[in-house]
Image (tube, rainbow, N blue to C red; front, side):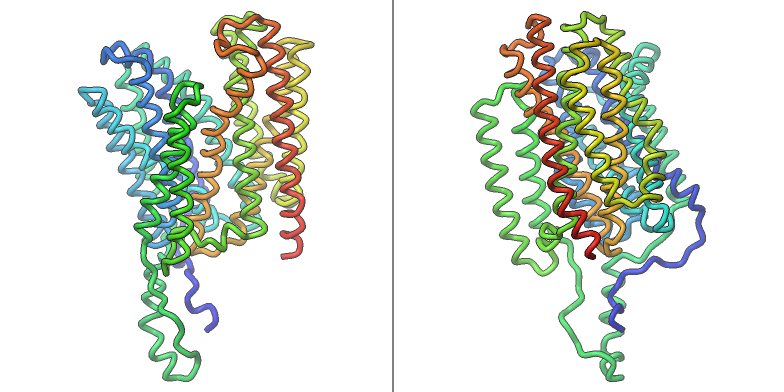
Length: 494
């Protein structure tokens, strides 16, 4: 009876292939919708006669909703059932996409994108959490690699697909396409995803069974098993994360008074959140999780690695266009090398993790990333496009190997009733790294170039900035390696 309160999946016959296909589609759509709207911003500026900072909220509202709510929706999935919530999230995403396509004003379009982001937060949080319920434990790495591949494909496909749709049918077509894909994903999830008993239902069964169990003398009554959703913690965390994301993204690279004020609000919100979580009976995030010797370093490594990967999007376009003199089309083609390589090596990385073990592959992936960053600091200046491509071909597989191994190491031994919130924390750490990388690596690049107006800098200055930026990136990944070593020891000891 020691495990009477444990949440267990309800036996159900389902297709593992179908379940993975539905999860992959959900991951593809959420990633696609992140990048597909960027290419529409100039068109939206003309369509609504709005400034570029105003239309940027079409992208920012989506990202803010994901960042602020992804942990909370992961926890909600643990309580009410992940299958039900994922289907609801997909349906909400589809409805919001359709609303965005019909939006008569920029304000309503931004509102629809925020709701779309809420649906995407559910999709991102619960796809990883669902892996433990759809595949055997020995194939977890392969499943994580597949999801990483679909994320890379969605990110890479967004700009090109968006450009084609806008040219042929107008900007509304990109949201209609998202709505159609969302409907397909809803039907696939309904058909193939297994059902599971939510934690709240399991707790109810325990409460109802406890008197009979006590009467039989099997176990003594313990504290109430009632599990409630932490509304206060949700509001505090959402406000904290939204303030931090705005602090990192507003001002278009200039960190002014408003950014400092928002960062102060985020720090104050974080302190209030920790204090609140220490006092509630059913916290949104158990503070003990943040002291876990495997989870805590994994979250930190995830954030560091994502911060570094943003450097390729911050510094890469300027180097290719300004230092090497490539056209816009050629720059786009070279930048696509990373996502294409990532899409091809994701599944392979997952299989390597299954065969050789997640803990060791975390360090292997990080070492490859250090080598890739060091190569980006040196080779492009020596060999131009060929040097850039060679370095990216080293960096990207290392990133995919790290992602597959890190996600597998974290999720492999997580209790069923905490998979959603832990999966949400993993996705959050990645998003925070991307948001932070936009500001921090952009500031490093501007400092290294030596001018605020990087677009007007001399080619030699941009090349020098590229080298220094990726030297810093290599140092950050090296810090992640140092975090991984004690985590590896803790994993082996466990």
